[in-house]
Length: 112
Image (cartoon, rainbow, N blue to C red; front, side):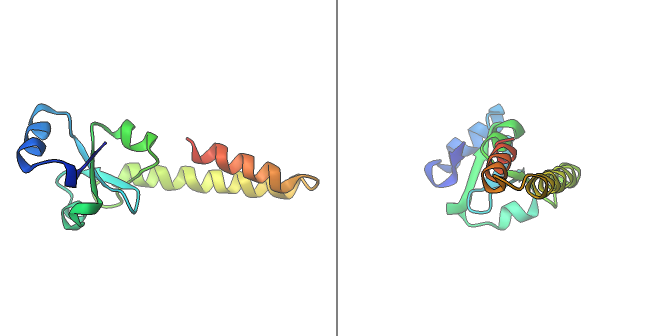
């Protein structure tokens, strides 16, 4: 991951040209998307970061952009809803140590 403030315009153009930068993201909102996304172009320079690929962004906890990556975003939302349902179900089913079990399930799901 590269921060926009730490790259010169020439270095950034070169990284895009040689393929070492393919996605951009917002480090405060933890959202990533395509480099040509209108939402990404409007963000502040100090919040902008760049990734080599989608896997790198996801591994760092970023979610897909709802504008330029609609299908990936909908898949992420669906997975999040299923995970939240699983946490709620586990919490209700396990009454003796529910808080510990809930925390473990939540931490485990956030790492994916």
